[in-house]
Image (tube, rainbow, N blue to C red; front, side, top):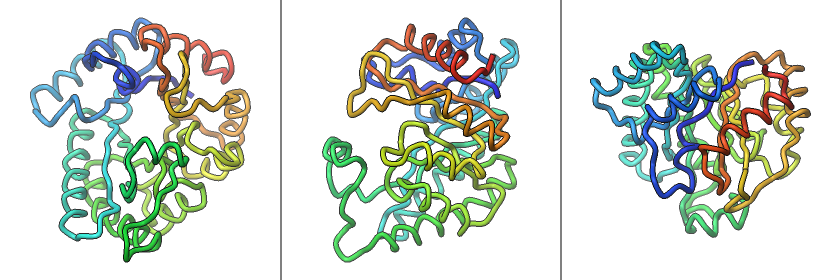
Length: 273
């Protein structure tokens, strides 16, 4: 396994957003192998995208994933199409960055505000007149529309267990199996299964191509599960997982210190170095 960090760790709960270049410098300083780039700060300006690729090369860092945010749980076809268009544009950006993976989300109903959503542990009522099966069908249909672009770009879409349709291991795998393509796999988030966490992680390892390793230095904002990374490492070893473990710091501590602590913790507990 190799270890990197997502640039999201430098933006979560921070008053000042650090640049992607800054995160690259820190990843190199901390002895990490690469970075995962959150799409928002990157945009789509080709000259800037290419400059990041060039900088990564000169530093000996991988850009192993582009992290994106989409919501396919939308009743109107035109709303879902906008999300599909966005995802396809991002796949092209991932290709230009040289990233072999792109993290995607299924989305959620948005019938309650996010603070209440988090208090309810990611559970919310559907929009009136629709069901969870409606959401599942929309997600599968939308992802099917993205598959040809993913294949053309050679970028694997990694669906993360991030609430909504993908809040349980079973439902996450149902989406992947319904799409039935090698270009849709799973990004395992170690902090997002709040019930039967380790068994749920074990279930999704067979489809996992990227691991998000959550840490909460400084205390969590919504929650801070205690994650046994020796146990996570054993689960990944049993599945012969050899890919990237991507640090996702979601605590209140400044990432300048917290990400280094996270890298030391994962190295010690997971034996990555």
